[in-house]
Length: 270
Image 1 (cartoon, rainbow, N blue to C red):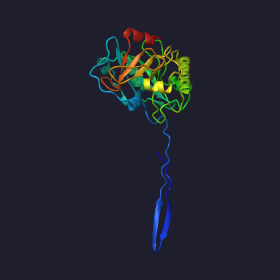
Image 2 (cartoon, helix red, strand yellow):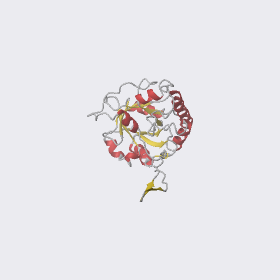
Image 3 (cartoon, rainbow, N blue to C red):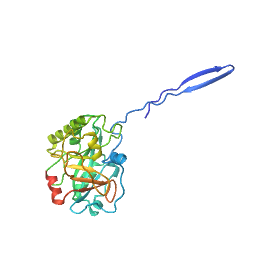
Image 4 (cartoon, rainbow, N blue to C red):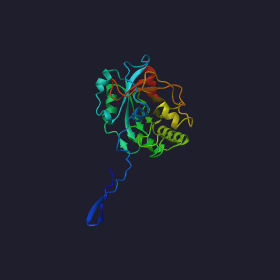
């Protein structure tokens, strides 16, 4: 919302003719508060890289486990239907920056668990708003925890194009790498697990590049909307989860776990 200012009047006299002009100042642009919009995993990747075409079947589905991710955009999810349609794991958005909490989180996070899925929470990062440790603390305190129950995935950090401006949030590769490292280290301190890293190859290689490697500690959840995955971000030799379609059979985004159900359980157990 812009700032409204009372119009000023300018009276000009041209001979016998008097003209009154109202001068209305242009509205002043206001920065959007970080809690004013709910950005879901891949929202900015689809915007910048495209959504791809709708594939008629799951690519390379043999030896994989189908899953989904949701946010407030899906509202209350029909978990029984998602289960009957074949989804076996889910990531649920919990937080964004340090000012947004998903109002549907409890129904989505608990509902997926109750139906039998392995599920985890994710955080949409805004690296120019506050440091990585502060956002990890906010996430851990608002749904981003972990327990060794065999049903909870490590919390995920969603790193993608800035929805408000500069692609890399005004940070250099070294600065972005340090931000991710601070988030990862703090979440490990809070939960006992390093985060799953959600990103796209194009964004990561541009904004983090070779500044740091996270493949030894963090599972990779990579977004690429196509029938073939293609190159991975720097620092990982394989993906753990592939977000391969922005919409489809399940509510929200469509995902494939790179392994069988026993391997998925091992990820949950740490």
